[in-house]
Image 1 (cartoon, rainbow, N blue to C red):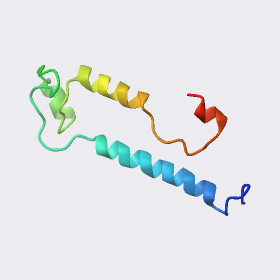
Image 2: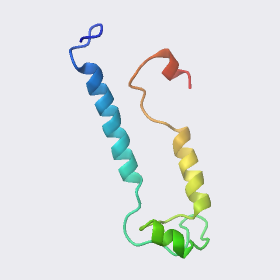
Image 3: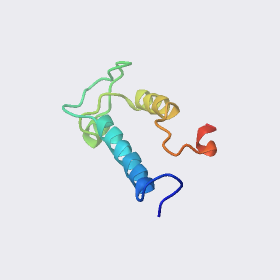
Image 4: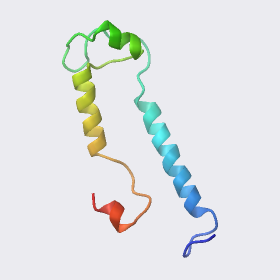
Length: 88
C-alpha cells in the first residue's frame, strides 16, 4: 500500500532503517576489552561485582548514569516527520 507519493514498502523501509540505526548505536555503546578498576572520569573504584557483571566496564555507576542521561537528552533522527514527533 503506497502512502501519498511514497512507493510501496517505503514506510516499512523507514521503520527498518530506524531499528537498524538504534541497534548500531546500542552496540557501539557496549564496553569492550578489559574492565578498569577505577572510573575513567572520576577515578572512583569500580566494585568487583560491577566489573564481573559488565566485562569491559570503564565508568562507575554514577558516571555511567550521567552519561546515559546526557545521551537520552540528545536523541537522534526524526524519520517520521509528524508534528507530534517534532514537539519534543
